[in-house]
Length: 137
Length: 137
DNA sequence: AATAATTAACTTGTATGCAAACAATTTATA
DNA sequence: TATAAATTGTTTGCATACAAGTTAATTATT
Image (cartoon, rainbow over all chains, first blue to last red; front, side, top):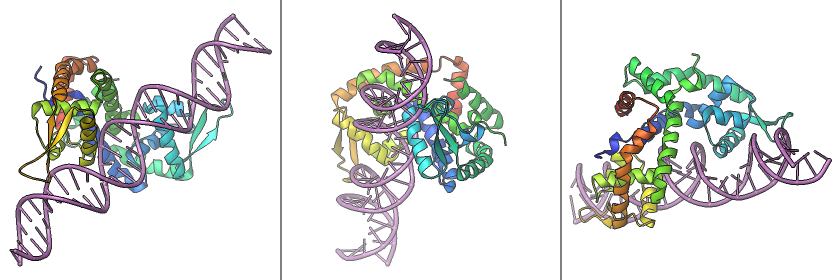
C-alpha cells in the first residue's frame, strides 16, 4: 500500500523513456530528424516500400501518429508516398535517396549510442533489461 | 552493426512506456484524470503544498509540461495554485478536497495495477526490471 | 543602494501519441 | 450482383513533451 512514485513502473518507464528520447534526439538531430523519425527510418532500412499498416505493426505506432510522422518525413524529402497498385486504399512508403543516405548514417551509430545510453549498467544488466522489456507487451 | 529495431533500447523504452501509459490511463480515467495527471496527484500525496520546481525535480517533468499539467488539474478542481509567502516568484501547488479524495483512490490501486501490468514477468523479474530502470538516469 | 546575475514560472511553437470519427476501397455475404 | 462488413489511411481534438524565449522576483556584486 505504501507505494512511492519512484517504485511505480508507469512512472519509471515514462521517466527513462523520456530520458532515452532526449538522448537519442540529441544524437540524430544533426541528421535533421527527431528521435521518432529516426526510428521510422531505421525501420525502413530493414524493409522498404511498405504500407503504413506494416509500419504500425512493426513499431506499434497509432495510425494517426504514423500519418503525421510520414507527413513530416515526406515534407523533408526523406521518403515519399507511392500508390499501391494492388490496393488503392494502401500507400507504399519509400525512402528517397536522401532518406537512404540518412538512414544508413543512423544505422551506423545506433549500436554505439545504445551502449552509451546504458553505460550506467554492466553489459549483463543491459542485456537483461532489453530482454525484460521485450517480454512485456 | 546489424541492429534490428527490436534491439534498440530507445525503441523498446518508447514502446513499453507507451503501453504502460495506455494501460495506466485506462485504470485512472474513471477518476477523471489522465495517466500523467494521476502520477502528479500521486506525487502530491507524498508531499502537498510544493512548488512547481519541486515537482519538476521529483517527477522530472519540464517546467512547460508542468505548467500545462497543473493548469488542467486546476481547471478540473483537483488542485489550486497558492501564493508562496516566502518567494513571490514561486507557487504552492495544493490539493483540493476533491484532489485529496481522488489521489487516495489512485494510491489504493497503484500497487495492484503495477503487478497486473507486469504479470507477464515473474515477481523476481519485475523487481529486477524496476531496479535496472531506477539505475538509469 | 544601484546594477548585474540568477531563478521560478509562464508562453510560444513544434512534435509526438492516442481516441474517435471519417472517406475511399476492398472483401464477404446474402 | 447488390449490399453489408471490414479495412486502410486520414482528419480532428486533446494531452503530453521539450526547446527557446519572456516576465517578475530574488540574490549577488559592485
